[in-house]
Image 1 (spheres, rainbow, N blue to C red):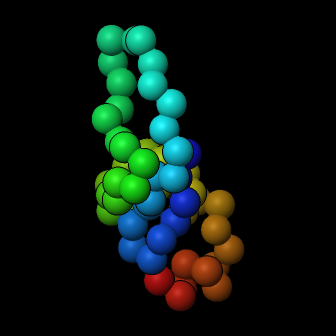
Image 2 (image 1 turned 30 degrees about the horizontal axis):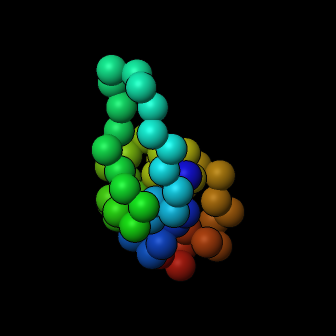
Length: 54
């Protein structure tokens, strides 16, 4: 789970899996919001005034 934080997404929770393909994003990790699928999803549902503030 992640939240938007200025120009990044911030991972606030992480659940491990036993599946062979997994994301290694520990709690507190930041990634550019435009560079991840989760960041793109979060941006897609923001109202225009929120996007303009970034």
